[in-house]
Structure formats: C-alpha cells, structure tokens
Length: 188
Image (cartoon, rainbow, N blue to C red; front, side, top):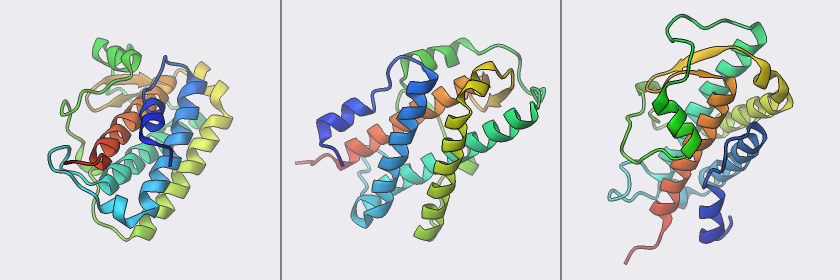
C-alpha cells in the first residue's frame, strides 16, 4: 500500500470525468482488496472516527459498488426506462456532491441493505471478484454510459443518470477510504 500522503492524495476525487472516475474506482477496488487481505487492518476500529471497522468500510463499499454496478449493467443493457420513482433532472444537492467530490462525514445514514454484516471472509473475497468483474465490464462499455438516457433513484439524492452513478460511486468510495485512512492513523 502506498504511504499515507500519496494515499490521501489518491482519494481526493478530482473534476468529474467518466474515464477518471472509472480509473479511480479500479484503484479503490485494489485498496478494498488490501484491507480484506490483512486481518489486522480489517479488524482495526477507532470509535472516535467511525463505529465501523476498516473491514466494515470495505464491506460497505462492496455492497454499494456491487449494487450500483448491477443496476448500471442491467438497466443500460435493456434500456430500461426510469422506473417512475424519480423525476428527470438531477437534484441541486446531488449536483453539488458530484461536482465537489465530497460527502460530509456523518451527513447520511446507509440504507439497511448496505450496512455490512459479519460474514465469512470468503464471502467478501468472492463479492470483491464479482464487483471487479462488473466494473471492468462497465469500463469496457463506457461510451454506452455517456449516451444512455437511463435514470434511477438514489435514496437521498434523487434521480441520477448512468455517468452520475459512476461519479457517485467514485466519490462514495473516496469518502469511505478516507475514513479508513483516519482509522489507520497512529494515535497517541
């Protein structure tokens, strides 16, 4: 794993751009793999930073990243239209988050299906492999995402289009990996 300073810079998501976001996500899955492979890091917890351990942060990223990838793959493949639960334009709050690349800590609660549960480490390793494969598939069809009109709702941000979902996933991953970095910092 890279040193603290280079790692912190790597997770400062830059200006929006589909290619940049997809590259960021590929790097994030490598970081998640590093967390999962080290039992000491996986179990590390600092209550003053987060109620979740480093492993919980990684597991949450796999759950959310896997769900987003499956939605993108399925909806863009079938050109499934908006499911009617969201309006056509992106909310101002979502635009701010996507443009800034920052999710304020403590500003949101994870939906219940995205809260990690204790499972066998092999479950998470298998999920990581599927998530990586799904995002590789998405990367290979990146041009299709840019021209696709499919939108679907985020529980707090409203309707997002395909490229906005990719951006959200990159920003969300950077947010949680920044928390991991803070958990891993030596404390006096």
